Each structure stands twice: as C-alpha cells, then as structure tokens.
Image 1 (tube, rainbow, N blue to C red):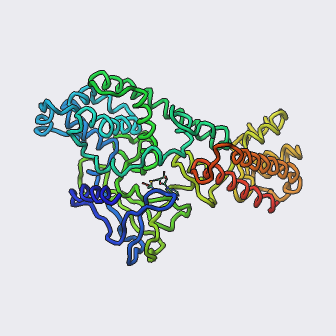
Image 2 (image 1 turned 180 degrees about the horizontal axis):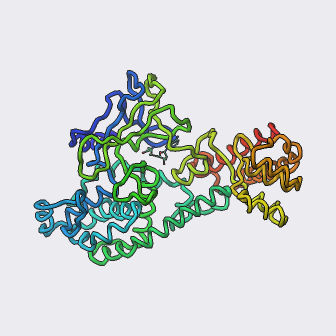
Image 3 (image 1 turned 135 degrees about the vertical axis):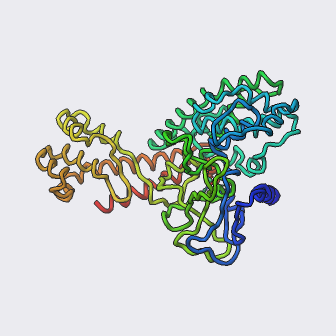
Length: 457
Ligand SMILES: C[S@@+](CC[C@H](N)C(=O)[O-])C[C@H]1O[C@@H](n2cnc3c(N)ncnc32)[C@H](O)[C@@H]1O
C-alpha cells in the first residue's frame, strides 16, 4: 500500500495548490479499509488537513476537459481544451483515445448525468485503455485508480449481490430488512437506467477495438466503478449541472480516504474554496479540523457522511456501525395494513396529508404515526384535529394507543429475532464475513432501538 500512496502523493504534488498536513498519514484500519490517522502533534479547529485542486478531481467538468483533449469537436466554453495540444494529440496515430472519444459529440456528452459520464470515462481510462494500448499508455488518473477499493472490498453492498452475475451472496437478499430492500431497489433502478445509456457506447468500443473482452465482463466492471463513485463522491457545485442535484459531486483523491463517524459537527468538515480561476471552475476541495482537537497519535481523522441509518450505510457504502443513533424503521407498510380497511380514517388522513411516511426511531413513533394510530384507535376526529393543529398534546392519546404500539413493536422484535436466527442457521454463515456481520448488525441495531422504545412506552 505504501508505494501506491507515495505515488498518489507525488502525482498530487504536480500541483502547487495541493496541500497535505504533515501530521496525518494513510493507514489500514481493521474492518474499515484505509483511513487517515494523526501521526503526532495536534489538529485544531479550522486547521487545513488536506487541500486538493480541481486539476486532480474527477467530476463532470474535468471529464469533459480531458475527453476534449482527444476530440477537437468537443467544445464547451471555459471548460474544454482548446488549440494546439488538442491538435497535436488528435494526430497521434497510436493514441487509442482519439479513436474511442471520436464517437462523442458535445451534445451527447452534455446530456449525460455525472454518474453516466463518470462511469463511462472511468471504464475507458482505467479498464479499456490498458487493453486498447497493450499496456503502453497510462491514464493521467492512474495513481488515483490504483488506491481505489477492489471489487471484493465492496462485496457487502446488496445491489452488488443482486446485480452482479458472479456474486456469491445472492442467498442473502431475502435477509434484507424492508428498508434495505427498498433502498436496494432504488439503486437497482438507477444502475439499470445508467447502464442502458452507456451500454451502446461500450459495445461500440468493443467493436472498434479488437480486445479479448465482452460486454458481460464490462458490466461487472461497471458495477465496480459505479460503487466506487457512489461510495467516494463528495458534494460539490458543478456549474454545468445546476439543475441536476444527483450530478453535483466530485471525486477527490486523498480526501476520499476519510472514514465516517455518526457524530455530526464534531470532527473534520469539507469546504470548497475558490482560490483562483481554474480549468473547471469546480474549486479547491479543502478538509479542515472541526471543534474536536485531535491530539492522540493514531487516532482516526473522521467526518460525517450525513445522518445515515445502518440500512442506508450498508446499501450506499457497504458497511454498518456497531451503534448508530440515526437508525430508524419505515413502518408505513405496517400501519397502512392496520388502518387501510377503515375508509373514513384513511380518507381523513389523506385529506389532511397524514397518509404514509410513518417511522420509528430512538425517540419512538413519529408524529405522523401517532396521529394515524390515535385516530384509528379512538375515532375521535375532533381531538385529532386539535392534535394536528398543535392545540393538544400527544400525551392525551398515549395510553389509548399503547396496546397497538406495543403490538407493532413486539411483532417487529420477533421478526428481527427470527431473521437473525435464520441467518445464523445458514450453512454458509460466517460471522467474520462482513456481509453476514453487517446484516446481523442491522438486526441488532433495530432490536436495541425497538426495545428502548418499548421500555419507554
Ligand atoms: C470514502 S471511502 C473511505 C476510505 C476507505 N476506507 C478506503 O479504504 O479507501 C468510504 C468507504 O470506507 C469504508 N468506511 C467508511 N467509514 C467506515 C466506518 N465507520 N466503518 C467501516 N467502514 C467504513 C466503507 O467501505 C466505505 O464504502
């Protein structure tokens, strides 16, 4: 690993705008992959830990810029390459990217989303280029690619179990919680939609170049690249994608070694700083120290990826936390099942915009669920009107709905205990395998949360 990290740093040092605080370094962290740790000294609030220029970030703008080097028809003012170098490269007879990127037009690139363009471009530069050039040409991004996780490091992600033809973990799909199942389904839709957009281009490349590779292999690489992007992208304004929130991200070397902490506003924080005009207008990506002062050698430098439950973390990133205060359960399907046959209650909830989005978290049933259950149990429309308007407190209904809420909690507790027992009884069960461990951890998180809520009723 050291050699690859050193090469990454040398590559970043090509830019005078790169900065790495000498008090930190990359280390292997048990069960977390690579991470950044404090070597010695202190890191205080606002101190810069890492600062990465836009020249070394992969995002919609920088990809357009790099593709345009090989295709002089790609022209986006202030973003793409112009002039001499482009002409020089487009006449290089042994540069396969001239032929490969020649199939693009400015319009065809601009209409792609960031996910589509980046997965296509990374496949080209990382997977295809060595094959197209018989390993004679290296991508500019090679030092960055070299430190990314292998497909095995991402094996815990349920959408990979589902979509990869070679995943050994398909048998775990029925063990997903309902929240994970829904999340996984959302990702499946995105994955197949983006694949439908880029597959014809990849097939054209397979026809253009005589390499020993087929579209099924490329699809496995696509899944790998898709989840590298998904698990490492950082929010950033992308001037060309102002209207498309899902496209507003950038990949930032070194910063993407930082692991997640569930605590918000304590550890480091990211900030985009605009120092001077640069090739892509995306800005310098800076990580600064938060309120917590780092002073213990080997302590991990962390930041918060967002207020994410274990179901979310598993699906997007392939890991879970042993304790996670952001865990919650969507119980809409349960409450809809209970009250769905009562037409008057259903009509009232729909009319008043209280139909659906029922959840339980560590604080208990959410307000929407309390309103729905209170009405279903009491049929006291007048008092529920007041509850909705805030003229009455939930306490009035607490005793009245305690039986139904206890029953919901008991059923869920039983379901997770049974799921865990069934998981442990699988022939292939292996508690050290993260795929099994993460599922058990999700069940345990839900059981702990539900038990706490039950004890507080
Ligand atoms: C942005 S990367 C962080 C660097 C990564 N560990 C690596 O080896 O390159 C996000 C990935 O790190 C891992 N990760 C991040 N935070 C973690 C945590 N608290 N526990 C376990 N794994 C974590 C997950 O595999 C996740 O997909």
